[in-house]
Length: 307
Length: 264
Image (cartoon, rainbow over all chains, first blue to last red; front, top):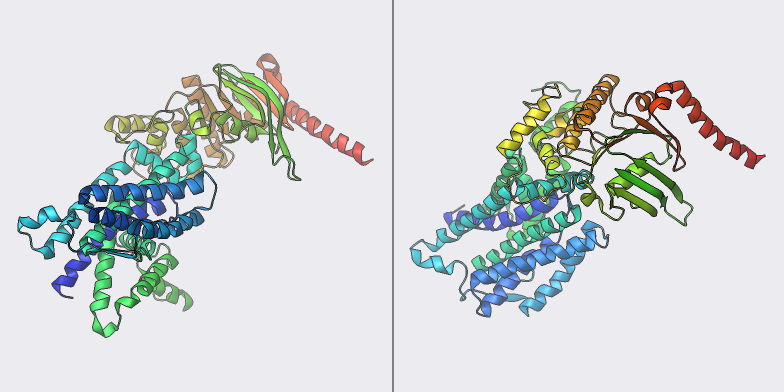
């Protein structure tokens, strides 16, 4: 793997760390399997790209992209909480609807941003090589977001949100308005994912209607990888683990695609990701998948030869 | 003071599954009174508690707490007035959160939750102090996950959580039923001490006749969603477990009699 593809992996890892944090919030904290992210990621990209092309300041455009993502999360939350549609189905409905919404926003399936100003433009005169600027910018953004999220989760409100996901009946008995809290969490989650989409579009110089496919799986992969590597205890560590998980996942992918002897091409990316996530879910609690496999084999052979 | 007026709850009305859990239950509980509630399965004990916490909306009737009609209040709003300990030790706490985080959740019961830190130093001191009084050596394990505690330890912590902040009414839903006998006694003693120390208005549902008579100052027996026995003071003091059993079977016996009449 050369430097360019290494830095590229780091950069995309940071962008998808935002997705991972959003997925962590919905899946792990709120216990709400949310597929809206497959729509809110391209939504963020679409809103930011369209506004920037219309001459809006890139930072304002990115902010509005976050708001759009939050609204998408709210729609899913309302479908589930107010109208009782199963959470998974509610999120799929929003995701499907967002495909059309995104096409409407962009006007066509693909927008180029190469010649437009982006959130990176103000830093381009600082003398940092373009190669390092993007990963550095990504690192700063994710550090700020992680600090804010880490803090949020240990506040009174954040603790209430964690209780809402873990034991809603107990949360209500403690006076937590679980429906409102869930809606807030879903908005935050999809706002983060839309921010990821908006930055993705600006760093890569385009927004495309198809970039959302599999966002949820990539986000989950990062969350699971982080948890597996860091034996997470406590929320602040979990937030950090999501970010490292995202980076590790991207590096692993870059490595796999660059290793000629494996014969993998970028077309195999989704398959590889799906297989990895499936394996991680099939082996629950098995931090080291090989250990679990070995334990099983030993069991079959009569349990001999431990350690 | 709590006043329950002609409370009726019907589940799945108009279907074959129709269940009339409460059928016009009325009672009044004075401030500081400790009431034990007994009754057979389906008598409406849990439904009464769920109505008081707002988890089950009554079909008709009124619930008034301290002069305020709270009948239409949803359960999170009701939490400011009523604290509850569940029968299932798993239900009343979050096993994934630490002991002190669970306590912090309870410490904000009924107040607005903002963006201040949930676990301040002052709160940690308060929690350590309150938990130390249990004598279960949990005060040095405040950072442990709740899931690591035994059922009895969790119920003890649940009781501390319920009494951490002032509450108009403490609701205990067979909170010792899932515990072994030794832990049952411990939790009952703890209940008695906490209720006396805080002078709490308490409603305790129990399956044990002995518990029903030995704790508190008044006993209610429910049957088919109504109060069939309401004893306190002298009359209650004279009552033996055997008398209560006799009354219990009499109430249920009458039901059998009416059935046999129907069948004959």
